[in-house]
Amino acid sequence: MNDPFHTRQTLLQRVQNPDDERAWEDFVAYYENFIYMVLRRMCYNHEDHQDLVQEILLKLWEKLKSYDRDKSKFRTWLSTVIRNTFINYLDKKSRRQKREDMISDPSMREMLYAENGTELDVFIHREWEIYARTLAMERIKGHFSGKALEVFDRMLDNKPVAQIAEELELGSSSVYKMGDRVKNRLKEEIKQIRQELEF
Image (cartoon, rainbow, N blue to C red; front, side, top):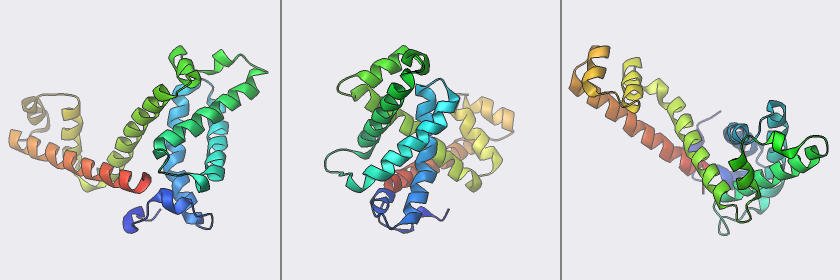
């Protein structure tokens, strides 16, 4: 995939143009894994995940042209599409299988069937933050030496700087510098991801 940051238009703006096939391919490349990650938390059956991802992508393809960012944030709109598609899928499957057996936990069941959908929006937002951080981390790995990433990982695990320095045979100031460089680059990458994938 080419660097998507060469354009001022966000991916969501581009994908609303039905003639921009590349935008749809980029959209699927970014959002398919996110949708899968959300569904994995919502549903027990792995076989259902792939079917649901495809159904949700189809719904998104059909509805993206009419998405209006003035009416709602994209993640709110996306969570509604995921929720409604998931509930419809459950309704179809419930004729053959108990609905409760397909949902991963009782709190998820309550989230799906809540009238206002706020809890599901919070869940989707939290999952999106995790997904954006993971995607950003993957992107920046090539920019740093193995030790810088090791330092950052250990800092995330709340290991003391002195312990990290000793384990990796570095000075404490090097540990701080490496950790800060990775953290700052990660923040920049997350910012770029948000600019590209969100309105």
